[in-house]
Image (cartoon, rainbow, N blue to C red):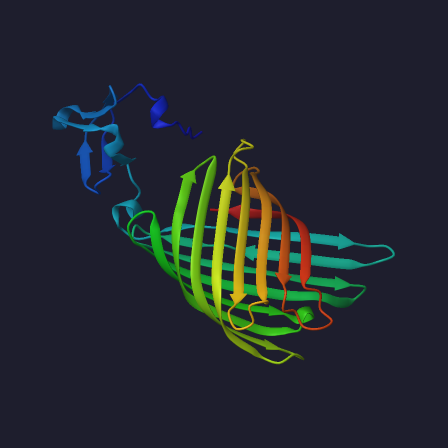
Length: 284
């Protein structure tokens, strides 16, 4: 399989196969062989030597050379069926594709829930999030956020959120990765019963992961926050705690806790929704 080894743990490398090397200054070097010795990258046939810290990628993919995009993502489902005194059917779905190039990144997130209890619909909600990131000086980027959301049983007919943000990859190690974004947005929320709300908002997005548990598993934390700058007591927080773990082939399992908080929820609607689920999905 694939081994991940820190450069600090490598004493020497002797590769007699042809290689393409992407250096930290984005220059590309080709060589019929490669040697790492005494913390130096040696290309014998090219008569060139570089310190190992100048090495970015060996045999880079086309997108790392500025050619096209790398497409990754996942699609997953959580299904629960109950029969007896109470008949219930629950279906959660999620789609998370990402297109990444050296200069920019497109992200799409689609998730929703359909529940039925004793033959009657008990939950029906969905959300679509689109993001565009343009990379500035590493590790910072600027982006545009667009969200469309519906929740039939929370009296929410449609909520639009759109606005720019500034982000940074604050830490980027397997043991702990932290990405944060701050921005401003325009929010337009139309309700079935309550009055329509339109306001400016401060927004933030936090994403953390860790491989602390090992076994190619990943602990993760995601939070999207929307703070109403017109009514500063109103805040929306969508927070997810989860653990994902690989299964056979490219299948992945995950256990999650989702907390959706809206301090400005309309009368008769709880301001906090809690969901606990186990998902099964496919990654690429």
